[in-house]
Amino acid sequence: MVISITLVHSPRPREVVELPLELENGATVAQALQACGFQALLARPAEQPAGMGIWGKRVSPAHVLRDQDRLELYRPLTVDPKVARRARFARQGAKKKAAGLFATRRAGAKAGY
Image 1 (cartoon, rainbow, N blue to C red):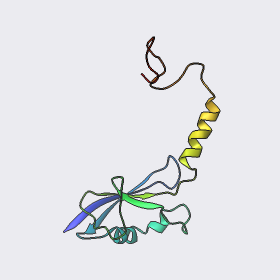
Image 2 (tube, rainbow, N blue to C red; image 1 turned 60 degrees about the vertical axis):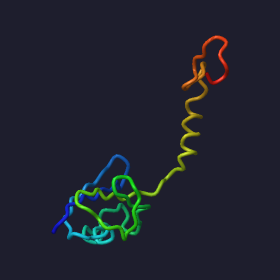
Image 3 (tube, helix red, strand yellow; image 1 turned 90 degrees about the horizontal axis):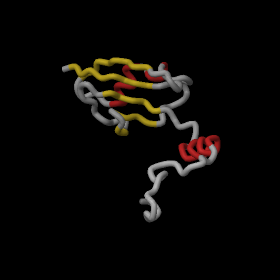
């Protein structure tokens, strides 16, 4: 029996490569990567994916694939998300009014309500 999967990789921001594959039943993630020649998909052939997942859940190379799985190859992060958030906030600057969920308060209400 043959299973159909889709291998998805984003070598650069705003660029997605989708590759449909047909593999034998019981194939693993490692076998799928070998079958598609994933080194050719990578921006720099020496780099390795930061991780792999199926529909957003991390898996190991030994994971057995099922029909209609979406195998995703993840890039390493280039910027720490906390640092990026702080930089965005610094660029925005402080707003005149308080921002967020508790921007407006009822008269006489406790803080945070």
